[in-house]
Length: 313
Ligand code: ADP
Ligand code: MG
Image 1 (cartoon, helix red, strand yellow):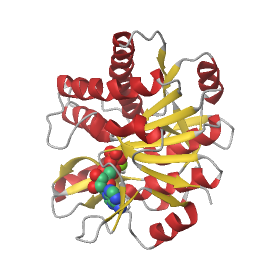
Image 2: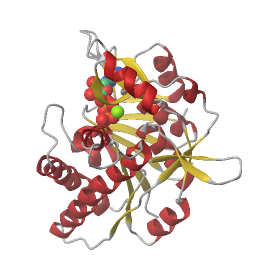
Image 3: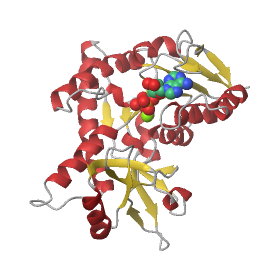
């Protein structure tokens, strides 16, 4: 029986910092990333790919804001769906081409995926995630009045809209993902953490303006499809203790209780390595494999030779 791996791709795999967000640049990065992911598939693993969407959804929001005189701006959940489509298309096409070059015939399918969050999640009381454009104080005041947006000053660079970042509760469409995997079809799903939705009191669903952390959604996805491996691919080869200091220490493996202690001690930053380690530890606690590594070393990391592994105690 082949193992099922959920591969969570970081933002760098799509757009590097300081690169212009052109279609060509993003496609080129995705093509490179897909060459590495194709190797995982060719090595016999069943793969579900999930990915970040920060810069892409930010740019779609900007297009909406800049053009609102001509075309009404769309809400954030719709922009999130657009970004899933945009990235999913590039990724599906690139991955199919990479597999073809390796003479491996396998299908790839992208699913537009909704992620349900709890409408009573504490995050809704304290929106914290800055998104979209910077505004002056006066403009910010206007947005506050016109749109009911919550505006906060962001590191002296101006005012930005902040939205809640609730925990993912349930990924929708899981049965379809499972059936596709059983048929040996590679699935791209839950991009950007999934399109955020809530269930209303009458049982119906509605989109909600929020941002969901992609690493925590990857964990939910792993749990719901009963995956064997959570593999978080990012732009560092390993997780480090005292990262960025002269005493930084590479972690090749760590038992989850030990890793949890490091997490409490603040070794992993909030918006970056923190959620990755949180997800990796939770999954390892269930007796499953969690790996954090670079894209380039993905196959070797699956064989236990590279990257950082979080082990169940
Ligand atoms: P992604 O787009 O892959 O989610 P992030 O920027 O969110 O990327 O997270 C990866 C970054 O986390 C690394 O580039 C590194 O700068 C940062 N980081 C913070 N703490 C650590 C740590 N303890 N070990 C390694 N990297 C860390
Ligand atoms: Mg991140």
